[in-house]
Amino acid sequence: MALSREQMAQRVARELKDGYYVNLGIGIPTLVANYVPDNIDVMLQSENGLLGMGEFPTEAQLDADMINAGKQTVTARTGASIFNSAESFAMIRGGHVDLTVLGAFEVDVEGNIASWMIPGKLVKGMGGAMDLVAGADNIIVTMTHASKDGESKLLSKCSLPLTGAGCIRKVLTDLAYLEIENGAFILRETAPGVSVEEIVAKTAGKLIVADDVKEMSF
View 1: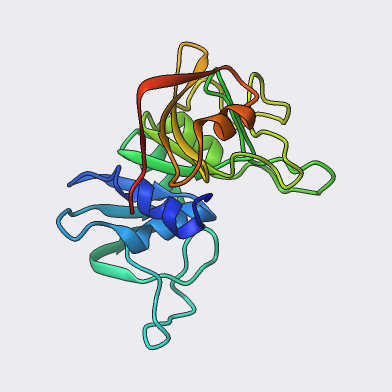
View 2 (view 1 turned 180 degrees about the horizontal axis):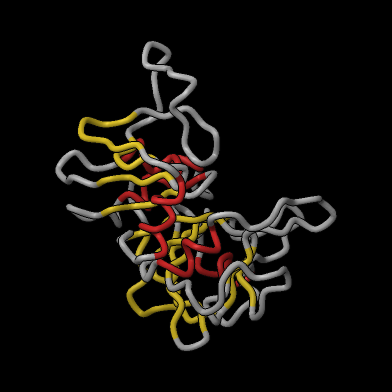
């Protein structure tokens, strides 16, 4: 079975380490805030100017003025700071974020990412993702392995305009966790019940199956 959005967020949360400053992109990445392990302390940064983002609010906690970069209502943890977006992007561009989690439309074997241009739709631009991929060394991309019509999103070469070049090393899809090394996707983990053969069939770029591939557990 392919991972749900919530399971993808849970798997990404395992990559968090005590003391990390983490930026969560729009979409599936924002769900990671709900699965931060209790035994570690991380500060979640939202590029619209919030450091110390908490879980999504209950109805009683809801504050329409407290939103993340995706305009979703959020909470602020004790010790949070609020500032303008210029300071937020100075943090990102200055390399002060330890981990960035982003969505994408395509990723290729060279570590290129395309995450902003939707064919046939008018878009405003790539937004903060451009700064995030340029300013962060540790990036995890979360995405579906294939499009709704079955076309692979893990490619030999991205077909859409790039957000960043040579910057991606880790990819979590609804089918697998992979790393990018030496012009190839390295399969490290499979989603529960998903076969290696299915992942191979749905990966268009060069894929190497690691000797110690394991199945994720939840």
